[in-house]
Image 1: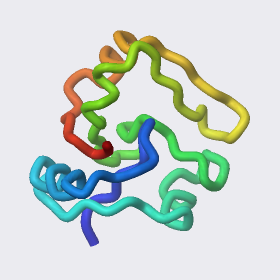
Image 2 (image 1 turned 135 degrees about the horizontal axis):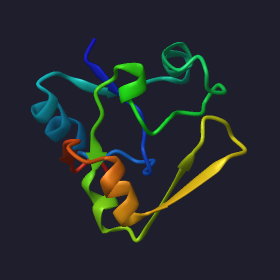
Image 3 (image 1 turned 90 degrees about the vertical axis):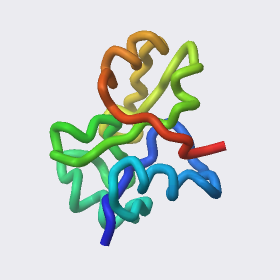
Image 4 (image 1 turned 45 degrees about the vertical axis):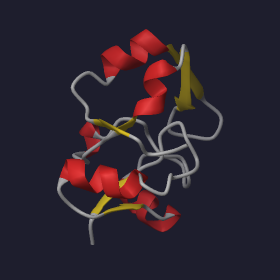
Length: 104
């Protein structure tokens, strides 16, 4: 199986997104199922996916569309906590992470 990407900020995957993402990480890329994410992120509620992969030793990739957003929102590990950061703040948090066209 290829590397698993957790959804970050966008729900749909573009037709070319997985191919471009795979070219960047050097492996086949697929979205993780809910069962797989529950096993990967045991400290999060089922179905809640963290935006940061580094604490879990999981390769991450940022949708390049997020670079144009003035505000970014993501779950805080459960379905009740919504985290807000400015676009600039998100860029700083994700410094050095590869970017790709994942959604449209």
